[in-house]
Length: 242
Image: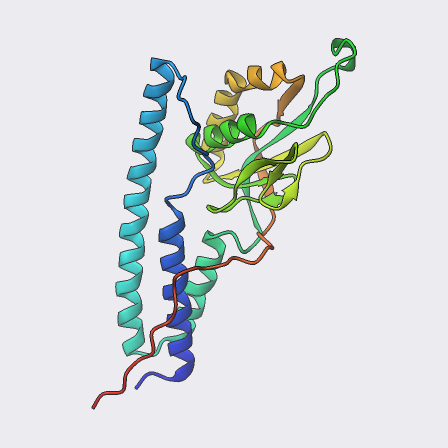
């Protein structure tokens, strides 16, 4: 019979996998009461959703394979392998600091001389969500906003006139968005696409500018530090064989 420690590892891993699959279907989008997008925007949205669906299916297949691998590992009580898998899952859902190739975006007010007495407000949640969705489309792997790690359940919203990323408030300018990618090639493509992105014009209308760093081999994204609450999932007690 498998040791109690191995049982604990496999229970924790199964809960994390279930949690990861469940939250994959959440995005930073929030529904609006009226859709005023033009045909090209709708086509772009459809294309993005199709890419997201393909990625989700691939991740579900990967998680299914892992569960089958765990079943084989249980038979041999390979506790060290389970520990390594647990650490990998923690990394994938954002619970560890990561470092890799990527770029850094800086959100700041435009030249004060151009403001003509206008007050510079914080970035709007709508523009910030559009920016995050765009860099995700360009191959972002890990993202942090003003030091706050984004995970799949992170919500960007306005609360009492203040833009919040999860529980973190964006109160001051400038702030930085750190982005890691799979490799330098992806980082360079992201950099080139961001140079011509229309999203910068949306920020400019709000008297803000988006500065894009050159691709860097070492961009650091911090770990997510807030508690992750899992609802509707409880471990099942194993019944003794009669």
